[in-house]
Image 1 (cartoon, rainbow, N blue to C red):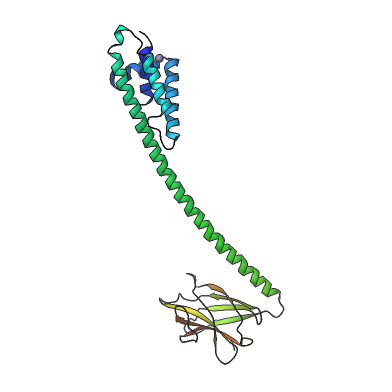
Image 2: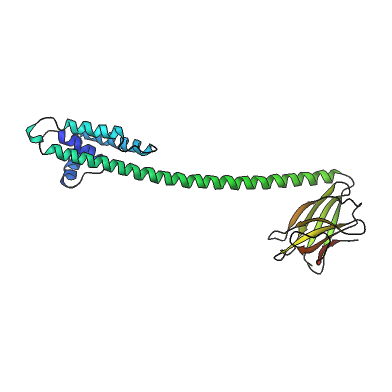
Length: 259
Ligand SMILES: [Zn+2]
């Protein structure tokens, strides 16, 4: 038997469009160790893999189509017994090209979906890194500011004691009368809905608002404090106030420094 029919069978086999008796016949032939067919199958598979990498997919890809047509041509050289073979080969080759295009389309769309997922994941990781970096920069800046304060001889540490409204709370303010300082709070319960904590400095006749803050889940908070313009601070205090803060204290006092 001539080898010619196997040329086409190999190309069709490579795109997974061979079935029935042809499939059995071709696989039996492959098992006999035909290097020609092995080469055709490998080349066709590589052409398909190349097609899958093309974006957007070319349908049908020129090199796959040409390879198939070459093989169909090779197996349709004039010969009396070719008559039945030619239409079968052409029909099967067309089916193979369609299968190749379909497969490539599937691979390309799955590939694109995977790329989309990767792009979203990358964007999420980048955003998370950006937030973490911003947080770290803030913490480093705060630590540097405190270190600078501690180098100044006039800097003192003021203790804040929890009052009846928050007996477990405590706090410290690292303070310099001209440079200001930083407040640290521990053990404060989370402010109720619609409320916030507000720090006050008392230097003159009336308390001055020195910023609002909320605590984390562990009851901790930290924030910078600017020096008031009415002289050295005699007392620091924290009250519970409406969200956003108020210009003069209205709520219960939770922390205060000793007078
Ligand atoms: Zn062969």
